[in-house]
Amino acid sequence: MGKTGGRGDFEWVYTDQPHNSRRKEILAKYPQIKSLMGPDPQLKWVVSGMVLTQLLACYLVKDLSWKWIFFWAYGFGGCINHSLTLAIHDISHNVAFGNKFAKWNRWFAMWANLPIGLPYSASFKKYHVDHHRYLGGDQLDVDIPTDFEGWFFTTPARKLLWLFLQPFFYALRPLVVNPKPVGELEIQNAVVQLTADLIIFYFWALSPLSTS
Image (tube, rainbow, N blue to C red; front, top):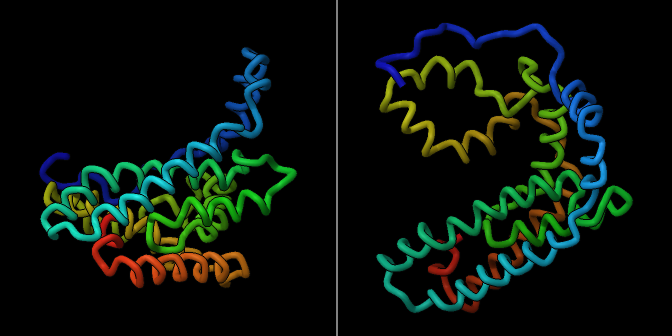
């Protein structure tokens, strides 16, 4: 990390973004890779297994003391939820059901979103497209830290804090850098997620939600 940040700006390169050129190079050298492209028939079952496991965990921890709930939330639920966020990324690329069934992928992403507690799968899809379209582009690729982040998080302690808060920056940065109107899928995502949270709270109180 160093004592403080050594640059006053991002490091800029002026070559084309590598997605398309690397794709062409890889396919030219290894054309057999194309046979691996397309939906993953196992993904929907693996994701569903993780979602159901988390819902079962909500029931199992409902009567535990808070110290054990925090332990399971970090050591068990956190691992599964991290895996589900990666699955939502893949689902945003239509890996679950293929490009011909794009809406199925959007709805399935909401199912994968349930254990996380906060609705984000629909918004992730909308903003992640820009990451691929404008990879590395200033103010367009919302995966890039803002100027404020680059200016403020320059000491070891601040950088460590940034790592802990990274999920919040990742979720909120698009709303600051490149906000877009709320769409129908995002409303559906919020309604589905809020309904699931309320059902869990109604039957098992607050403690299971903390494991998400």
